[in-house]
Figure (cartoon, rainbow, N blue to C red):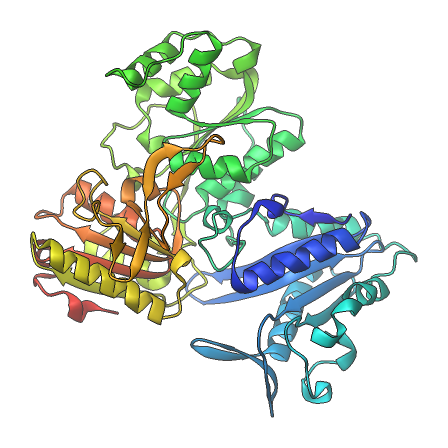
Length: 554
């Protein structure tokens, strides 16, 4: 079986073209032997501040036994054969396949050329369109011998073996190429891709934390990362977790929100510990034969008190401590977690003060090295620009997403009018679907917590059944939700995750105080492509000076 990077792909859920890519990945993994390395979803991004942004995607990059690289561009579904060549139509554009392949190949060649010291390996490319038969291969703009269409699907693996022969002289650059694809490109899964809520399976954060934060060295290793939303804190945490396991170290990942911990537990390999702070305390108390009764008041306070006095044995000692969402942690928790670290252990503290929704004071970490990052690679430029204008962020957020635009849809509802709130929220879902977003790609987030939300009693909005958390967990510890198509959750619970389309609704406040600013910031920065804001008339007046904000749609 071929070596596939990154791992964890068999547990992924996807639909449409992404599902077809996973089917191809299965074919490659099972049809090639372990002399082949398959990199899937290789996204390359280059952001030059104040100049330009390049963005592209290579579906598969295969490194053969001799070091030759084969790039496979997969186009699922229907294609158009035009006078200018083979094209793929998207909701808002049409892309020439040959031009796209040439651009991606040239871009990767240029980067490999620099990385390999001016001696890049040989790079081949082919087009795989498993659902379409090319009627006129000679006019497609691509060498017909490098097109594997629906008629030739069975020839994909033989052609790969022909282009990447198993015998011959091994290029000395092969180890460098593998390192480049596996490390420099930082193939770290994005959390929202794993839960099937994004159109892109993997995200490459240009200059992101997952690469350069791991280049820091200090003794003892105590690194505090203060970074804004979308800079890649959770991606860094996953990379550190995997790296620790690969080096034979035992990692502990701790965050505040249960939904985030559940997602991380699915993504990372076994061998370490993943938990919220209270989950960790519960597991420790059970091993001590002192389980906490959650039906009694004060259960969480008792858990916290137990860790305050806990002296860990070997069972609860770790080589790598990763604290995510550190801004939500109480000051005493840091000392409790550091007691679980072995003497030579490494500790990471990841936080964003702007996402402190619980009003906790900053944790004092004397002697720690501090790293700061402000560039948001997740949210579209238009979303970041809007937040800077409305919230007067200081320092201002920096946009580094390859998506220059990104739609922002703003509407208002009458104060205290639940029917109007429902109508505006339903209309926002309809507009999102009309813009091409599938229902699983939409997250409806409430500004208020679920226990106080006016939308909590609703099982559907208009024709759209809602998928809401029930508060229960199955035997595998996964969050149970109601049957539905569109996820609804609170901004508090969704912190740490993202969705291609976020409808941030029930935004209601009279004063734009620090609490409101942080909540708006967190909700808006969950969107990777499209954002809808649904504000009460009072909130609209506070932000825009008018109770009708619909004219502010960008």
